[in-house]
Length: 412
Ligand SMILES: Cc1cc2nc3c(=O)[nH]c(=O)nc-3n(C[C@H](O)[C@H](O)[C@H](O)COP(=O)(O)OP(=O)(O)OC[C@H]3O[C@@H](n4cnc5c(N)ncnc54)[C@H](O)[C@@H]3O)c2cc1C
View 1 (cartoon, rainbow, N blue to C red):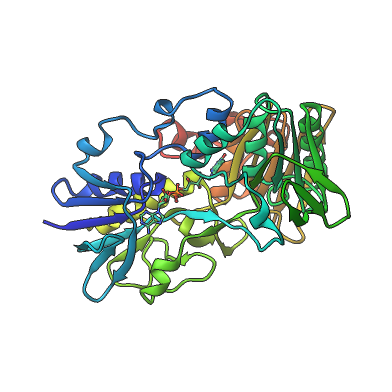
View 2: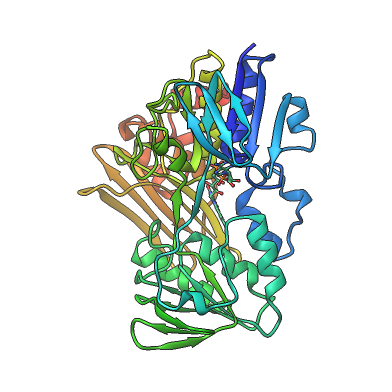
C-alpha cells in the first residue's frame, strides 16, 4: 500500500487527493495543513467581509470530503524539511513522516517589500487567509480610514470587502493603473472609474515611501492618514522547502507537465509552482485557482501510477467589483493584432497572432467567455471557425461542427 503525503491543504491539495483516489483506492493519504481550516475557497474571503458568505459556506468541498477520500489531515502543523533521499518529511514538532510519493502544495505568501517605518504601524494586515480576514474584521470600525497598498486583485477585493464597513478606503500602487498585471490602460481606466464611483479613492503611480505611525508619506510627497493598513503588494511562491531539499526552483518550483519536480517521487502543484503558459509560450508563476486544482489533480493521478498531463495552462481571471465583471485570459504577444469593441458600459479586446486567438480582456459583457477561453487553450486555428461571428458574439454555432461535436459529447 502506497503512502502519499501532501504538504499544504489548499485547492491544489484537494485536486491531488481526488487525483490519487481516481487511481488508488487503498493507499494512505496524509495532508499537512499549516492552517486550521478544511480546504476553503480563498477568493471568498472578501465576500466574507461583505457578509455575503460565512465560514461554513466558504468550504471548497463538503464536510465529509476527507473522510470520503480516506485522507488524514494534521491541522496547524507545518512541514519544515524534505529528506528526498530518505523519502521522509519533518514537521515543525519534530515528527517524521515517511512517504512513497510526496506532493508540495504550499501555495504562496504575501510579499512585503522593505518600507521605512513599517514597524511603527500598529494595525497592519495581509489579505490572504481566513485568519487575516477575521483579524481585519476585528480591527475595523465604521470610523476607520483604510489604506491599502496594492491595486492588484487582492488589494481591490479587500477594498470591495471592506466598503460599507469603514469610513473611507484609499488604494495606492506604484503602477499607473489598477489591476496592472491583467488589464491594459483602457480597460483599467474603466474599472478604476467604476471603483471610484463606488467610493474607493486611488493614488496611482506612487506608493508609501515611509510610515510614521498612522501616517503614510507617499513617494510623490502626499501624506495619507489612516487607522488600518492592508499590505497587498503581491505574493511570492512558497518554494523554500523544495529549494532546501535541493529541488530546482526559480520564481516557483519547476515542474513538468506531469507536475514532477526535479526531486525523485516529489511532485508540486498550485501557486508554489511555475509552468508553461501556452498562450505566450513562456514559463511563469500563474497563481490561479482553476490551474491549482488541475495541477493538483494531475499530480495525484501520476503519484498513484496513472497518467495525466497538464499541458494547456493559460492565465485567466474572472472577477467583478461592485457588479462590474471582468474576464481576461491568455496574453498579448508582441506583434499581435487587436479587435476592439467598446462603449460606455463595456469593452471587448481580442488579441490574435498567427491565425490564433492568444488572449482577451472583457469588461461589462462577460457571458459565454468559455468559448474564447477554449479557442486559446486549444490553440484552435481561426480558419476552422467563423471568427467574424465569434468576434461579435461568442456562440457555439460559430465554432465548427467538429468542435461542437466534442462539446456536446462533453469532451471539451
Ligand atoms: C483575496 C484573493 C482573491 C483571489 N481571487 C482569485 C480569483 O478570482 N480567481 C483565481 O483564479 N484565483 C484567485 N485567487 C488566488 C487563488 O486563491 C489561489 O490561486 C489558490 O488558492 C491557490 O491554491 P493552492 O492550493 O496552490 O495554494 P493555497 O490556497 O495558498 O494553499 C496553500 C496552503 O499550504 C499551506 N502551507 C504552506 N507551506 C506549508 C508547509 N510548509 N506545511 C504545511 N502547510 C503549508 C498554506 O498555509 C496554505 O494553507 C485569489 C486569492 C486571494 C487571496
